[in-house]
Image (cartoon, rainbow, N blue to C red; front, side):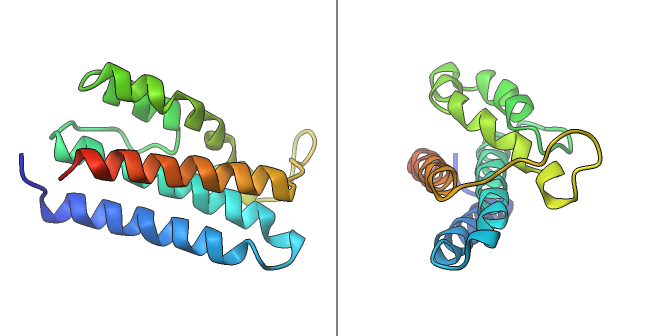
Length: 131
């Protein structure tokens, strides 16, 4: 299979989100929530690029677990490898708004670092499979 324009666009957006997250890491602590959001976005977009490459239709979702269920239909090993990225789904929407129910999620530098590592590993793994 050859990469299409939409696959390249998904991967470009994923890369931009990851680069932004890494650049923001050196900023103030108050930006850690933005960093983990960008990591979630990077992973989501990389997976959507992978699915587009394989011509798998997917629903409009920010839920990485749901996206991985589509990946499972193409490559069960990859879906298993990326399983730990599901934790990023909690950073997709709720972290962007004030907590209305329950506690706010406290994001530390360690969490931000871990999210960047997950997003980077995901981007590299998916990109390597789409050549």
